[in-house]
Length: 122
Image 1 (cartoon, rainbow, N blue to C red):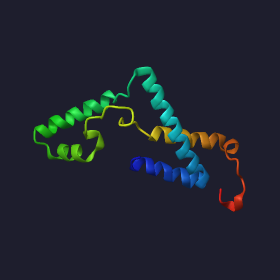
Image 2: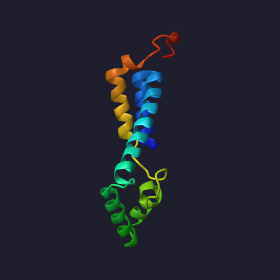
Image 3: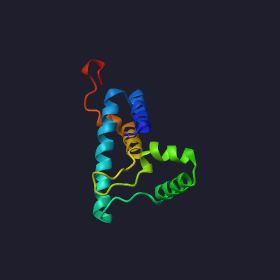
Image 4: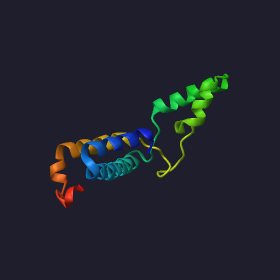
């Protein structure tokens, strides 16, 4: 999870409370895992988007030409490194799955929430 994902979780907790934040994290994790497994079954591997590869290549060329800002970006950004091989090492964006889980809780939260009491805890 990156900082943007943490902000989305904070937003889910502010809107839906503790139970909504827990549901969002759990549902997003399950849906992200299923999506990754389906992609591996269909394609045989998880591939990095072409736009990310092109941006990394442009940054590497700029850094080789002496651009200090490009060097800093390559050092600090995790996408500056070449992707690792293997299912467990391939980065996939988590934010879209968090947003999907938030929307699921927003529209179907009453059906999802089994505990409506518990002294205001949930």
